[in-house]
Image 1 (cartoon, helix red, strand yellow):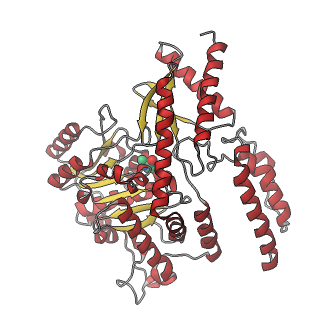
Image 2: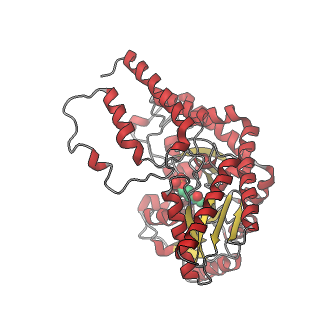
Image 3: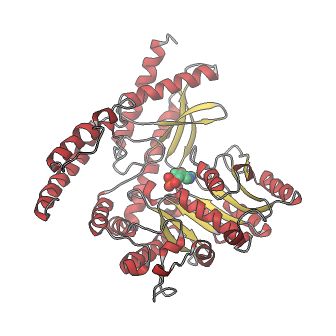
Amino acid sequence: MLSAEEFRKYAHQMVDWIADYYQDIEKYPVKSQVAPGEIKAQLPDYAPQKGEDMQDIFADFQKIIMPGMTHWQSPNFYAYFPANASFPSMLGEMLTSALGAQCMIWETSPAAAELEEQVMQWLRDMLGLPSSFSGVIQDTASTATLCALISAREKATNFSVNKIGLSQQRKMRVYCSTETHSSVEKAVKIMGLGKENLVKISVDEQQAIQLSVLENAISADIDAGYLPICVVAALGTTGTLGLDPLNELAELCKARNIWLHVDAAYAGSAFILKEYQHYLKGVEGVDSFVFNPHKWLMTHFDCSAYFVKDVDTLINSFAILPEYLKTATRGKVNDYRDWGVPLGRRFRALKLWFVIRSFGKEGLQKQIRHHIELAHKLAHLIREDDAFVLQIERMNLLAFYCQFSENQEVNNQKNQELMQKLNASGKLYLTHTKLKGQFLIRMVIGQTQVQEHHVVESWRLIKQTAEDLKVGYGA
Ligand SMILES: *Cc1c(COP(=O)(O)O)cnc(C)c1O
């Protein structure tokens, strides 16, 4: 076992390595360039019989593991959505790791429970959510959405599914748009409703849910004997950051007595800006709301902020009370194990506290505005370029294609090739989406470290690679 003195030595060494890593991060290929199986082939078949030297383990980390890593903290990471880290967040995580506490209930670490309560209030107020909402940190938005749907199910059935199961219930239905994240379908499957009872509603030209189609679907389902339990609104769809009309959805759900859950996993961070809070009009009518500080708010994965209007419904859906968890403080404090799926909980509020205090509300706002401005500048360059078509500019997400050919199929194939060539260069990392059969290169400019020169250089590389492809194909 490592002694405290040895720990001190290696920890200093690794902190130095971490600082160097961040300084040199642009030297690494953003997307890992290894082939399938390449890493595993370098690992021994059996666990070591005897303990090994930390120096050797660390050397293998650098030699074997690092080449198989994709560098999410590179400023040239534009793929998916970012999973932003920051130094304050990392320092918080180091301390969480040092304490190694399991924060399932108040008694197992009162500071963890009370800090979580307070930082979630800070976040709630920063976003302009109603002061009646209570917040809890979940591991992911997928888990939060599962909690929302189960709460909706229990409320709609007077908590009877938890008691007697699904077999004697009316068939339940959940609604969302075709652009809504796959975690909704996963939740519907896990909770036993069956994915055929997730009704996917078509979207309009702005990738927002079509209200009249939704209303008709709900009415038809009620006539056919179904029980509509929940509508999931997307504020910022994964493909294109489409925004559903919250105010109208809230009115509709209120009139029909249906739970309204909001999935703002990515775009939610932008609501700390006044200029984006108008998308939250009607939010008093929402039953639950999730967004991920672990995407765009400079806080390490995992940290998903889940807010509910009626905390009793959440707790009544998830509370358990075996003898060994009975405490004298129950009812006077928040026992967060009753606010979600897992019993055990990491001390995640600490890194969030470090981030919010270190950046300040203004610092966080500045960071998000900076990303949106960078995206806006690049959008301007793409629009000015005859070879490219910019299809989407929303917040800090751009989706575009290069015009190689009039034939959509050929064009799609060449744009895919363009993206793969760019990713294989290791200089940047992009992913794609499809809109009406059109392959779009999707670029999210939101990495903690990204500056204008990264974006300008990336754009130069995109144009150059597209040129090379054209020449190569004699177009
Ligand atoms: C990323 C994302 C999710 C899933 O988030 P996890 O925290 O990884 O579960 C859900 N919805 C939207 C809109 C997302 O962007």
